Length: 78
View 1: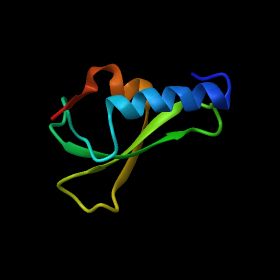
View 2: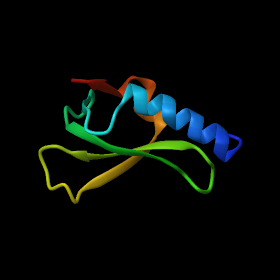
View 3: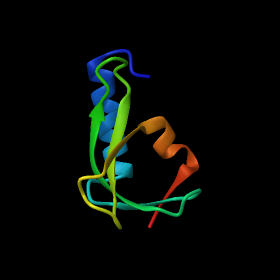
């Protein structure tokens, strides 16, 4: 978890390089295919998070997951 907004912004810059907006990822457990929409900071914790949507479903179904979970091996880039 980031300790300051500046640290969180630095982590977001790194995460954006690993998973650019529009990049496509598969969730290994469910097989779902998702598109990264953007990277954000969770206000309560200052933790970076990834916002994404299911490619096969309505774009209005938007998900947010802590970046630490998104990049821990649950997803693979296609």
